[in-house]
Length: 178
Image 1: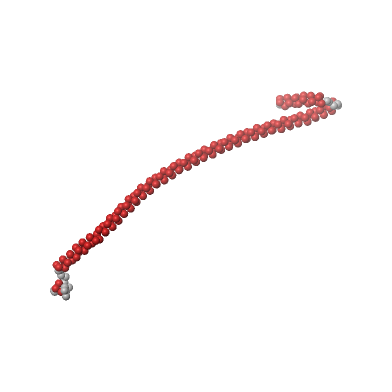
Image 2: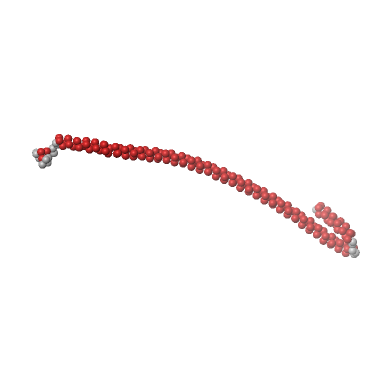
């Protein structure tokens, strides 16, 4: 019983503080503190410094990424604005080109319609003139036939032509006067 002299003799359950053990505890603490500081404190501080540096670096990268994201966002908005302006300009040019093409088509259609109308008038005039000539020939034949029956004799072709021309001229002047 090496420790027997240090046990309190008063009561087995009483708390007694012995200065020797307090001194031993302090020495143990100081030795442990020296060893920890010498052996472990440096690596722990180095690890903490590296970790703090990584955190700072991460924060700096985060801030740089945020600034870059903002810059890219501004560039994208600028590009989108330019694209919208270009799209509007293209739409405007396309609309103007379509309107010009429509006007050109209308002009061509009007010109074609006028040409067709003119051709129709010309054709109608030609048909009218042809019908008139045919009518004159038939009227002339009828007049010659009627004149030969009235006169009771046949007339020569020259007399016949002169008679027809005179009759048609008289009929033409009467039609123009009415």
